[in-house]
Amino acid sequence: MSIVKLEVKNITYYERGSEETPCYNATVYINGKKAVEVSNDGQGGCDRQHTYPECQFDIRQIDKWCVEKFGQETWEYNGNTYSTDLDLEHYCHQELYKWIDTKALKKEMKKQYLCVDKKDDREFLVTFIKTSPSSPQKDHAFENHLKSKYPHMIGKCLNFLPFDEALEIYKEYV
Image (cartoon, rainbow, N blue to C red):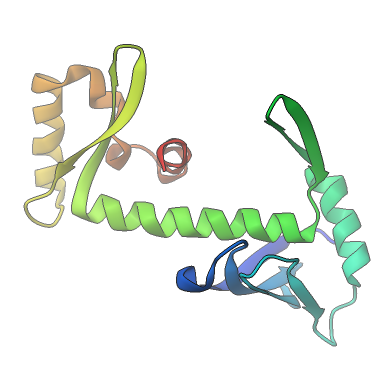
């Protein structure tokens, strides 16, 4: 049997406990079945990874699959280039941060319209407070307001974009 699908579910994030690393718990599912319980106490250090007894894979096999599937992440810091294999721990952290950003964006979009504006060759996120909960009529009225007052923002209002696209843009500004 081989790994086909990896999912991180049941995420619980403890922002107040996160100091050097994220403080969280989550469950990794492999091919739709519970496989690994992951956690980190937020004090700096690696995640704890414990396979469930019914899991058919060990952590080394899962890490190897992740590296083959996701490759490496490369970044620059102080003029130096660094890279690391995207193993299970890195994958879990990416999914955790995506989960955190998704939750934050949904909360923000309930309270306000989020639009990207450009001024002097800089882009930034501007917000328009919603005076009451969204409805299709109010969203349409706001869209018309943007078209008349801020036509350059109409294609950049996160509330009117597909969520995955809005999330990618949002992550650039948070």
